[in-house]
Image 1 (cartoon, rainbow, N blue to C red):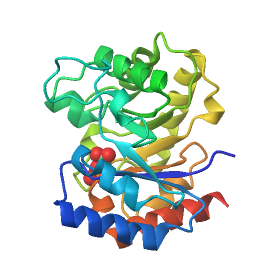
Image 2 (image 1 turned 30 degrees about the vertical axis):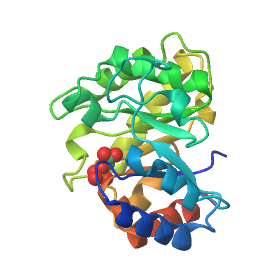
Image 3 (image 1 turned 180 degrees about the vertical axis):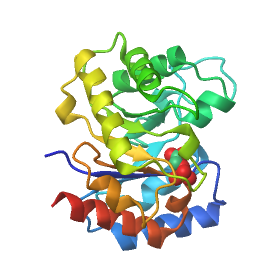
Length: 244
Ligand code: PGA
C-alpha cells in the first residue's frame, strides 16, 4: 500500500516569526501521524523549518528549483543547494506555469535535475477551466518525464480552476484523472502503483475525506489550509485514517 502524503505549500506567505510559530504548531499537532507530512515554506525559511522539524518524521520541500547546478542565474536556487535542506521539491505548480513562464519543457528539466540530485519532485499537473483535462494531463506528464529513468516521484493533480477558489473538484472526477496520470506514468516506464498521486485545489477538512477515500488518491497538496496548523493537522489525520 502507498503511504499517504499531505504536503503544505505555504506559497509566498509567512514572516519569519509566523513561519516559526506555524511549523512548531504543525509539529506538535501532526507529529505522531503515520502519514508523510511535507512542509513547503518559502526558500528563505527552508532552513529554519527543516531545523524545527529535526528529530520528527516530518519532511520539508521547496516550492520550485532551477535546473542548473550553479552559475550566473540571478535569483534562482539550484538543486545542489537544496540537497540536505529538504527531501521534496514542487515542480510545475500552475502558478509557476501561469505567472513565471514554466513550460512543459522547463518542468521536464526541473524534474530531471531533482531526480539527478536525489530530491523527490512533486510534479503538479492539471487543466485550466475549459481545457480538456485528459489531454492536458497526459501531455504534461509525458513531457515532464521524457528522458528520465524511474526515480522516486510524487504526482499531484491540481485543476487550475480549483486552486485558491474554494471550488474543489468532485472526488470521483479527481479519481478518474488520477487513473489517467497512472496510465501515463506506466507509459513513461514508472511503476504506477508505487507513485503517490495527490489531489490539490481548495482542499479543506470538509472535502478532504472524499478525496482520500478514492483508491487512486494518496493524499493532498494543500495551499491556503496549510497556513492553519489545526486544519492542516486535521487533513493529516484524515489521510491517516483513510489509509489504515
Ligand atoms: P489551495 O492551493 O489549497 O489554496 O487551493 C493548492 C495549491 O496551490 O497547491
